[in-house]
Image (cartoon, rainbow, N blue to C red; front, side, top):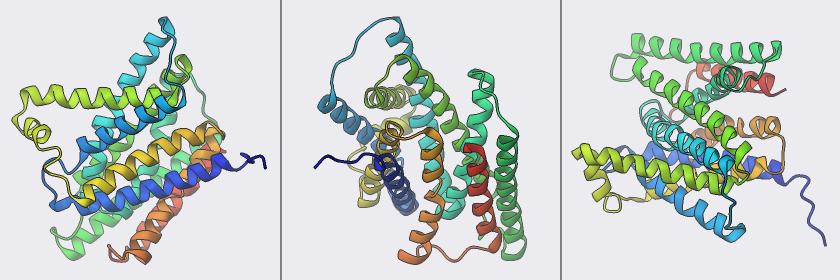
Length: 302
C-alpha cells in the first residue's frame, strides 16, 4: 500500500510543536543544573543528529560559488539560533516560566516580517500589520501583568522587565536565523546539511568564547559532567523539534507550518497546567496574551 504524504507535513509540524513544548518544560527544570544549564549540550545533540540524518539521506554536495555563500549564511544562522537564540531562550524560560516564555515566542513572526522586508525585499500586507499589532498587544498584556503582579505580590514573586526583554531578544535572534537560513536554503538545498553547519558553527563559536572566558572554558570541560535528566531531555526535545520543523517545510507551505507550530502555546499550557501541573494557574491577562499571539500569527500567515 502506497503511503499517502498529504498530511505528513502537518503531522510533522504538530510533532515539532509538541517537542518544543517538552523542551520548554524540561528547560524550566534545569534551574538547579550545573554548568550552562545544557545550552552547549543541546547544540552538540543537534549537531550529531543533523549529521546522521544528512549521512543517511544523501551525504553528498556540490561545491561552487552558491554553495560557499550558502555555507556563509548557514554559519550566520547558527550564531543567531544556536548561540544567541538558545542561550536567551533557556534564560527566558527559567526566569519567566513556560507559559509566559511560550507566549513571547510568538514575537518571532513580527521580527521575521520586518527583517524580511529590509533584507529580502519582501512586502507585507494590511493583514500582516493587523497580525503584528495583535502580537505586540499580547506582549503588552504580558508586561502589564508583570507590573501588576509586582505591585500586588511583591518584587520577589513577579518577573522583572529585564526577564521579558530576554525573551524579546530571543525572538529577535530566532527571527534573524529564519532570514539567514532562508538565504542559505536558496543557495544550498539541503536542510539537514544546513542544520549541521549551523550547529557546528554555533559549537565552534562557543569554543572560541571559551578561549577568553574561564567560565565558558569550565562549561566545555564539564559539558558531560554537568548532565542531568532534564538537560538531556531538553536537548533531545529541542533538537527533535527543530529537525521536525525543517522536515515539515519539505512537505507543506511555510504558512501552514507556522500556523500549526503556533499551537505550541496551547500545548505548553495543557502540559504545564493539566498534565504536569508544574506552574500555578496564570492570570486571565496571560491567557488573553496567548490568544492574541495566536490570532496575530494566523493573520500574518494568511
